[in-house]
Amino acid sequence: MSGLNKVMLIGRLGRDPEIRYSSNNTPICNFSIATSERIRKGDNFEEKTEWHRIVVFGNQAENASKFLKKGSLVFVDGKIQSRTYQDKDGNERNVFEIVANSLNFLDPRDSNFQSQPERTYQNTQKDADQPQQSQGNAPKFDNDDDELPF
Image 1 (cartoon, helix red, strand yellow):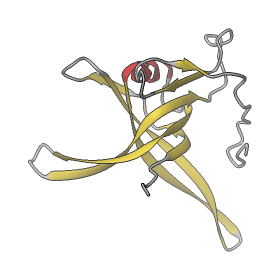
Image 2 (cartoon, helix red, strand yellow):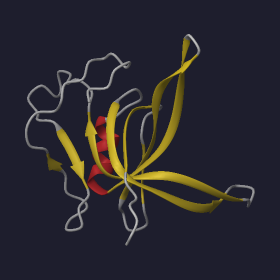
Image 3 (cartoon, one colour):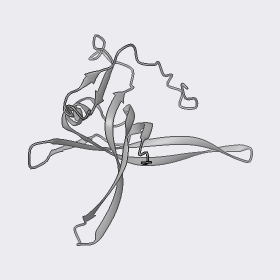
C-alpha cells in the first residue's frame, strides 16, 4: 500500500507573491500563508498562527502573482515537499513547502472581478499549465475568522 501526501489549507498571504522563471522559462511563484486557530487556555482563548511556504508552477503561478496580494484569502490544495539547498554562507538548509496542485481565490470580488466566475487553477497530469474554471458558485464566507464555513 502506498502513502498519502495531501494538504489543504485556507489562509491569508503574509506578503505579495514573488514570481521568477526557471532556465526553461517555466513560471514559479512563491508566497507564504498564515493559518490560525483559537486554543482555549483556562478561561481565555489564545490564537496560534502557523506559516506555510507555498510554491506554484506554470500558468497558475502567473495567475497567483497577478491576482493575489498581501492579505488575500486563498484555498491551497497540494502536497508537502522537502528540499535541501545551500545558503549564502555555504551552509546546508532544509525547507518544507507546499507544492500547490490547485488554488482557489476566496476574497470577495471587487469591481475588477464582478463579471468573472470563481477562478480555480489546477495542475493536472495531462496539462499542468492550463487553468480550469470551477463549475458552480464559490461558497460564501463571512469575514468572521472565528468560524469556518464547514
